[in-house]
Image: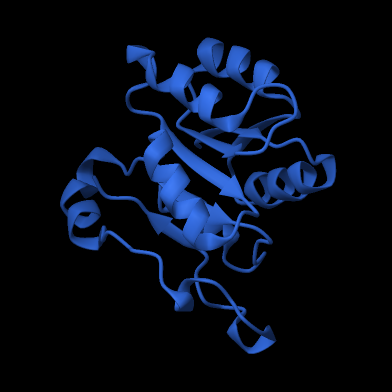
Length: 160
């Protein structure tokens, strides 16, 4: 079971995300402010932090910067979770030091899989992880443009 921290100021969105992840067997803690999420992350050392970039108290860039300064969080994946336009989201998330991006609105049928792609794999599957990991670049196909495209991924792994 993975430990995931969700920092999202929209309570309805935070509840939906938590419900989906818990249903799939993950331990999830949600926080509506950057400060609360940051404090908990420092204390619990989660496997992954899913963070909205537009928080009301501390901007996402500052929270991510503070997370990245902590050596004890070096193995924690930090994923931007945003409704920003995709091109902007990818550019900002990369500049902020995120490991990837999941854009809103989410597709509930593939959301858990998107998150799990960023979780650490078991040590026995290291070779599989390397073989299956690919760096995605933002394209127009990455974001659904109509209802026919609902199953297209809306996430991307950022490469250095």
